[in-house]
Image 1 (tube, rainbow, N blue to C red):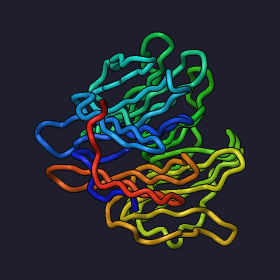
Image 2 (image 1 turned 180 degrees about the vertical axis):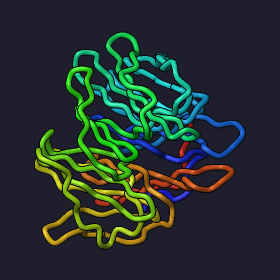
Image 3 (image 1 turned 30 degrees about the vertical axis):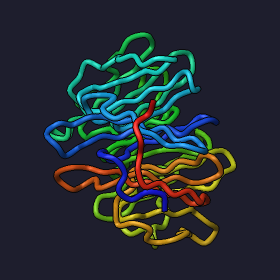
Image 4 (image 1 turned 90 degrees about the vertical axis):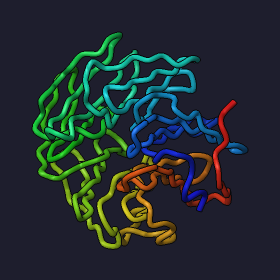
Amino acid sequence: MVGDTLGNAVLLGAWSTEQEMLLVGGDLGSETPHGDLVRITPNSACVEEALTEHPLWWIHGLSDQDWWAVGEEGTAVHWDGEFTRLDIPTTATLYGVFAAANDSVWAVGGHSDTGRGEVWHWDGEWTLIKGDIPGQTFKVWQDWIVGDGQAWRISGETLIPVPTSARLVTVRGRSAEDVYAVGGQGNPTVLRHQGQEWEELGVQKLNGPVSGVWTAPGETVWVAGNYGVMAQLGDDGWEIPSFPLTSQHFHAVWQWDGAMWFVGGNLFERGENHGTLACHGCERELSALDACE
């Protein structure tokens, strides 16, 4: 365990360069919401608190000089050596972002009050690709988008449906033709797509909805979810390294510095928020976050 009650914000997304891992999140429950950025290196950890006035939900980039973070009320931040606000003209919460090559960025989200989703594309300016979708869209990875009762493939600026009725929160794959999507509502859902249609995978030992998934070419599939779920997919099903490390809820999982990192917090509690950070394969302890210099 690294830290169970860190800072004043839940942790929602993770991404890394070779030198550092970046976590984004925010205070979801107070009257003064804000978005935070946590920087972790092999020897230090600090927080840039209230980087934005709205919580940040996801982060992705191409290098340490080119990454994006998105969040509530259309918030979009670009780092290219300095922070630039490039907000999207929407009041939607942007739950996912993916930075592709050639200055192409995809952002997805929706409106919790209406349950409608949106998909946006950046190629020098933001363009609404599809709005008023019946179901919020939650995450985007390469040319895949998943959401509430839906999944899509991106072809140019066209969205091609990949039928599903599942509530899918996060998507990631070993390749574009070996893709895993996770989610659920009440019970966990894990789907795999290998070029034809979605295949349901067994969810034994996964106690509750799954929010995060990580894998890469030649790598193991890891998932994270509610009530401290952290597991890897083995030959005989899900292997849980140590359960439960926490009763808090994980929203994302990421590999960095030879370990698997699980990020979350008290996601469903009212009032002040805090973050939770756990890892498998490291020996670090972290009880507090100092302000970044």
